[in-house]
Amino acid sequence: MKRLLLATLLVFASSLSHASFQIGQVFIGHCNGTVDVYDPTSGALMQTLNAALPGQDSTYVCTYGMTFDGAGNVYVTTADPYIKAVVKFDNNGNQLGTFGSGYTEVGGILHDQAGNFYVGQFTGPILKFSPTGILLDSYTPAHDSTGAWPGETDIALAADQKTCCTVHGGAKSRATTLQPRLRVQTILTSATTLTLEPLHL
Image (cartoon, rainbow, N blue to C red; front, side, top):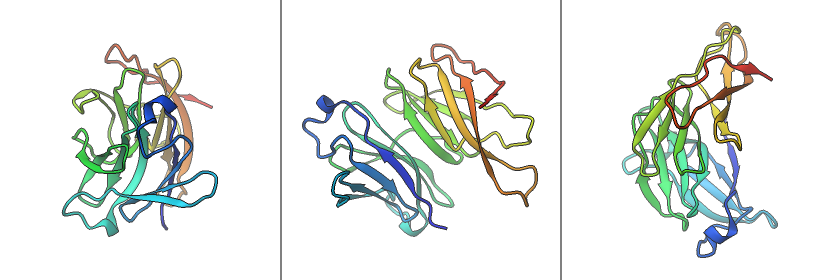
């Protein structure tokens, strides 16, 4: 089944006054190594970004999460069977290479007001990176009583810059359909701790 990811550019207009990307444009990632950029009014395709890295077969590259920094640069989490990466683009859509490292299976990505980035993973901890891609910390999600796996497919940071909402899949057996669950955990961004007990909404 083809996997799609939908994201909308949510940065201040003053940050993009010189950029080709505009507020409201819709970015859709595909499992063919591309991200399509659409006009929100007409629905017209404006641009296609190539998220495949040099040497990768784009046929097997899936895009999962996206975020944008204050300069309008785009960060896309990608994976093929061998390479898991965050690919960075400038605000004109030119690929600038990878951001950060040490991923096991990338999922969602976001950044806080200080410019630090958080990458959720299907397997493995949430990773925190500096604005330049240096690994600063990691947060291991708590297991819950349903038998769900600890990996986080999507993450979001609340306005308080400390509360991390995570969505993950879980199954009690391989035959059971994966069910999304929303969990709220607190990341103390000035420390190295994560509240391990999830709140189920």
